[in-house]
Amino acid sequence: MSSATAPSAVRKILIVKLGSFGDIIHAIPAQQHIHLHHPEAQIHWLTEPPYAALLGRIPGIHRVWIADTRKWRRQITSLPEAVRLIGSLRRQHFDQALDLQGLVKSAVLARLSGARQVVGFTPEQSREPASAYFYSDTLPGDSGNRPHVIEINLELTRALDCTPNGASPLIPLTLPEEADSYVDRKLDLAGINRPVLINPGAGWITKRWPAPSYGRLLLQLQQQLELPVVVAYGPGEEELVEQMEEAAGSPVVAFPTDFVQLAALCRRSRLMVAGDTGPLHLAVALGTPTVAILGPTSPWRNGPFNPEDVTVKRDLPCSDSYKRTCDQFICMDIPVEDVFDAVVRRLAQ
Image (cartoon, rainbow, N blue to C red):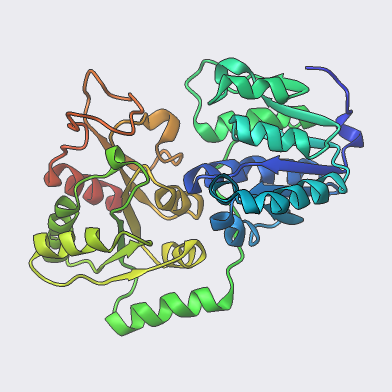
């Protein structure tokens, strides 16, 4: 890596991390690390629309910029919007842009920002190796010691002379009063305090533990442990709640949340049970105990960063395949009793 921009001279930084939700959560510790070591620097963040509200609540982020890349691909008429965004970014005169995404589209945006130095991962460690063509400097993210994705992101802060040691998943988050009020109102209506939180959704179908299994787990938590349970879900996940209710044989307490409301709910919950999803990683980041149900992803790379949290996973020849689709789909064939036992162990800590 060259020294085109001395870290001491960096006054304005652009972080490019477009999505997804879990990836955003895993990148915030790197932003916090930079903010700690360079409190005088302005840190900007370029992301996609769904994550702007949450990032706007993170201390140390001076401004959140929105790149609606999906709309740009769908609608040619949105091209002027993209051009305006690039023009606005260039007028900021960034000293450095860090691409924590590792995709060609994120690397191109980092380069088009006009930053004097554009830093990303080496081709071997980028999600799309071609992204490295758009960087002025590259750094390795994987030291070979099975780092967690949080630690991988922190490696990129070396470009600012930030030694990435003592990594923590915890992030500060200031919540608006309306998010707290929404969650409190829902819990009060259900007569619930400090629930176990279940999130049955996941971005990849291969990361989803079957909704009926979640329903049976919910029933055991209520009957055997006498614990209140709340199901959190997002847009398009209503069917998962219906399948849980059918398996449980009765209605469940469930209500939709956006990312900020979900954060408020996590802070009021004694435990979350979920797959390798953004909501799970948000709970970890807020200090909520978790039980993670993992299928195609690796526990040491993508599981809860808190060593006290419990991961349930089958050991198969195809484990850690990172496949988004699968003909066999056996890695999430995990007995309810195994997850229930994990909940008992985590609560006992």
